[in-house]
Image 1 (cartoon, rainbow, N blue to C red):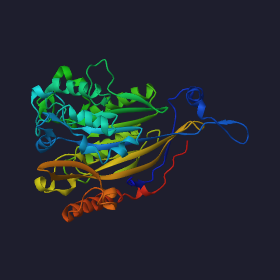
Image 2 (cartoon, rainbow, N blue to C red):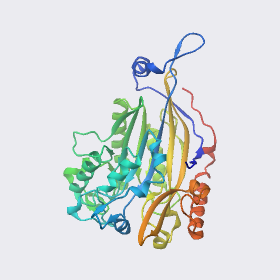
Image 3 (cartoon, rainbow, N blue to C red):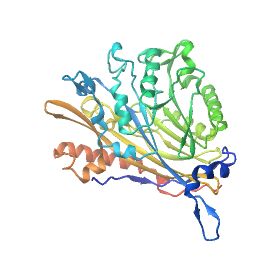
Image 4 (cartoon, rainbow, N blue to C red):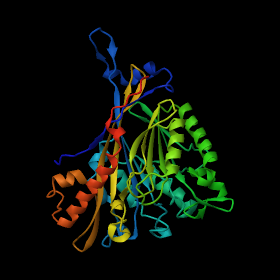
Length: 418
């Protein structure tokens, strides 16, 4: 067995449970088997602990389509891409990714940039890798039109994967409340829009059909304050529906830029003030910092991962002359529910640096997501003896650690009392 490594960011937030109603009665029945006796003879329920894992962009470019196709069977298979990181994902109670492509079916024709359409086999691989929840709100949501967007939802749900960010009808809520081992987590996803086309909103330069406008969670920089007020209404509905902790995935920022821009900071602050506990960012295709921001929301602080980078893509240095596009992280957030004190705590954030390896084997290109600290600790196991590849992995690790660890607040223990 290979020893797995996480790097730690220590964050502790205590969030009062105000939306739970009679938490003692509601919880004891579900967890009565876990009651233990303490010295004074009173029953005590141990805290519930869960781990949320999140990664950034999952993309499939043309060379990846070729690499994952088996001419002998006529089928696609993406499972090998995730084989070295799936243990980390399977350990999580809830694993989330951003799917930056559509699953519109083979009849549409598989395609890459600028209009992505990927075989359903990718959904099979995501399920096998350990993902539970897929964010489908991004600038490529409409690459294959509304029909492609709707089919993407079907393809994911048919495999038992839940979807946030897009929906099939206005009668379906634009968020989900998921009970994870007794903790009700509210989850939703939003994407930025491309510039208005006259008076019509757009994604990736494609007009959003007016009749489908409400099926996609999106916001316009040109109407930002108005859209954020509407987003706040959604968050209020989530709280009313029983969400004890709110997680929002957001597609924002500037591509290939590691510094966080002013829009991101403004939006993060507003979302934190509205009561979002965890913000998970994507779109820049490079890593950006993880911060703990002060807010006026009830919880007082919000964890913000501004960009988790590329988890899987063909955005290589050889193509873009940017080494940072090969880097990603698995963000792990430990959440603890104290049943006696009626409080939730986000008490630990760890991360696993990842790097996308691309190499040739038996005349075929292979893509694999590698956990870089594991790899550098056991090069032979991963069959990585090429000095140039090892240098690139070491460089990726150093770049990631330098960026993430540069925020001093993350190394401090921060507590908010009830």
